[in-house]
Length: 262
Ligand SMILES: NC(=O)c1ccc[n+]([C@@H]2O[C@H](COP(=O)([O-])OP(=O)(O)OC[C@H]3O[C@@H](n4cnc5c(N)ncnc54)[C@H](O)[C@@H]3O)[C@@H](O)[C@H]2O)c1
Image (cartoon, rainbow, N blue to C red; front, top):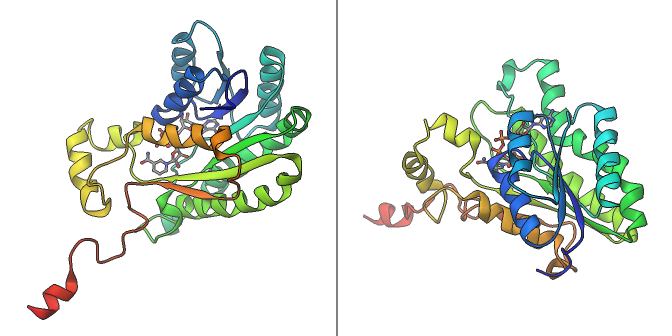
């Protein structure tokens, strides 16, 4: 990929399986990375994978002074900021039963955290002559899901925010896009399925055209592409990385016309 060598990225949620894969793919392409995550154990373990070029800065996205500290650390270590990738999320969601504090948590991490990070990083990105931002949407942004109000609403807001940011930052040569994964093998799926990936694939198969969950590396490849020069004319877009989930309607592969004719 062109345009990644010697650039500097901040990846929030870099301690996740998906985030860590983004960090590895950036590193392979010569990009220096600051990992911003609240998870100290996995963040530090990730940094230890690399001799240099990856730095973990423990950061709570809901705390502005910690976001500023993270930006300052990136500039001090690597001389600037070119890319921001907003992977971190909160899955807190009890639908109707969710209280105000839970709504604040969900929106504070999933939506507002990335915006506050950008506010702190923006002058540095302008100083570098531009850059790219990749936000994380989800297939959950587009459909109704039983018992889930906070997470889907926050992800729909992220997709819309991406368009607004793309509009206003184009003048600074900063491109802003989102990726919307379908079910991806991650800490959450690992935990919920009891570590059974075959089971996750079986359950996911009916609503993902490709009949399986995605791999972290497949999502990471889309993120790194959107930051690269190969995507130089792409901004304001939402790229589904979902094995066909979003293109599939409620009929799924059931061929109901054939059932009607039978
Ligand atoms: N896994 C999936 O199937 C799937 C599907 C669609 C979209 N996504 C999106 O992909 C991204 C990664 O998902 P995942 O399932 O790997 O997530 P995850 O739950 O495994 O990880 C979330 C990460 O965010 C970090 N985090 C939480 N609160 C934080 C805070 N206040 N400050 C800083 N970091 C904080 C956690 O420490 C963790 O590393 C998310 O944006 C999610 O919405 C995932």
